[in-house]
Image (cartoon, rainbow, N blue to C red; front, side):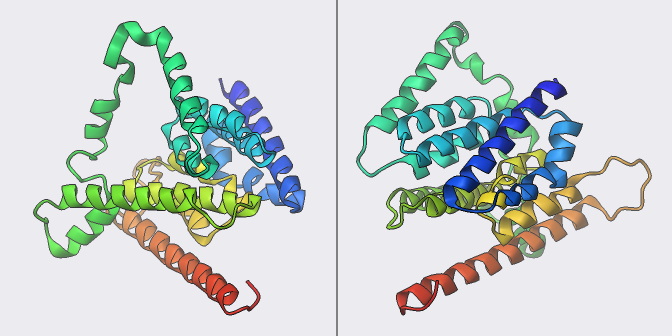
Amino acid sequence: MKAGLLVFEAVAIAAIIALLGRLGLPATRVAAYAWHPLPVWEIAGNGHVDAAMLAFLLIGLLAFLRGNTLAGGLLVTLVALVKPVALLVLPVLWRPWNWRLPLVVGATVSVAYLPFISVGTGVLGFLPNYLREEGFTSGAGYKLLWVVESFSGPLTHGVAAFVAVSAVFLAGLALAIGFPSDRSGEASLHAASWLLVAFPILISPHYPWYFLALAPFLALAPSAAAWALTSTSVLFYDVVPNDSLPAYEARIAVFTLATLAALAYGLWCQWRRTAGVAVGGTP
């Protein structure tokens, strides 16, 4: 299993190099992914299927940048059936009022579902129990909400409000990315990176491998938030019995604060670039 996933990772690395070439960036930047501890631990070490997701996701983005949007959408949709997080990239591929990409997405999902139609909603498997197990239904799994309630105490309807605000924010971000003024390859990859950054910050995954989707963008469209999420996720590990590590809650607090600080820095840098362009300065 691990050997097969390493083949997928080799494909992902080749796709990153091809994307870097497409953007006119040095191929050596692939080291930001290939030498990052997170893919080493979670793919070669733990054999997570995210390697397959990364390979097809990056090939789909490469097809998109080469002008084949529908092929890119097909590949991204297929891999989203392996790891739904890949769906976050689809707004980058979409062009306003173009119905062909949504049609390809819907047709791909339908055809892929046909072999499993006899089990009906059972195709979702453990998903409902997973949502309960990870604290998403109770709200205990959302780190931002947890940090707030650590100071304020339990908030009435706090979970519903947090989920609603998060959904509106992600929808607004997706729409903003779907109607951009800059359609360049570099801008598209930065947009994909921002979606992949925003989602885990809001849903607060509990396992480091959930951040693997961000690792290729450290080479393609790096940001302080992506570096913080992929690097400080090591704080989630607690595999040495009777160790002297700080309590889990303390480590999660450090992770959350580091992420928010990196996000604030990234937004400040983005604002400075935007302001520089607006006044005719160097972006």
